[in-house]
Length: 221
Image 1 (cartoon, rainbow, N blue to C red):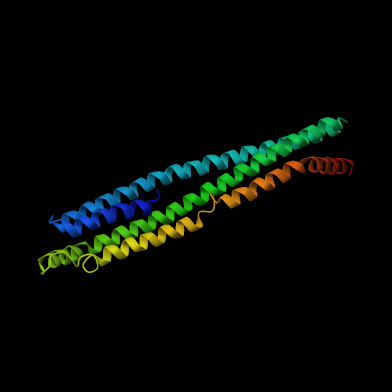
Image 2 (cartoon, helix red, strand yellow; image 1 turned 90 degrees about the vertical axis):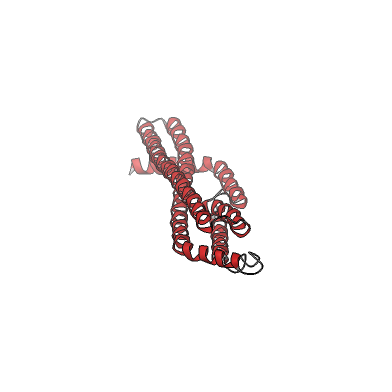
């Protein structure tokens, strides 16, 4: 559940209570803000975890690329020793290592992108909290005035609490934008990636032979 989704849950539940309850509106708004601050803190903890994941993946990418380079060096060593079959085996291992490195790089890019989006979401959430804090006194006064008017709180939903309703609408919009940009879990993209991985496996043999020929030309030159 995203931070905006959690914000919506807090705001909408407290919105109904603010309309229907006889409780002090200032206290209820304070409680709402306290819960929203809690959600921001939780999102920040999630961000620390996400940044840690991205950092660990980047380290694995470096290690995987070192393995790729290591297998190429072994292929060169085998060719210099006149063992073409061993060089070919080393290049096959290099291809496997390269596929692993590419996969790790995609994961690292995804984790980094997710962390950036979460940072942006937290910054926007904090702005929303500050906005509600700035208007808390005005909203509380409007609630009291509406309750004192004939008919009680019947007009609160579209009148006095319009600011909070606009806030929840803005959060809905932000949530939609985040979901629309979350392409990492797109099933169509995953299917296309799987097809390319299968194609890469089929063409792996020719890639190895091409690399072997290139290394031979390099050594001969």
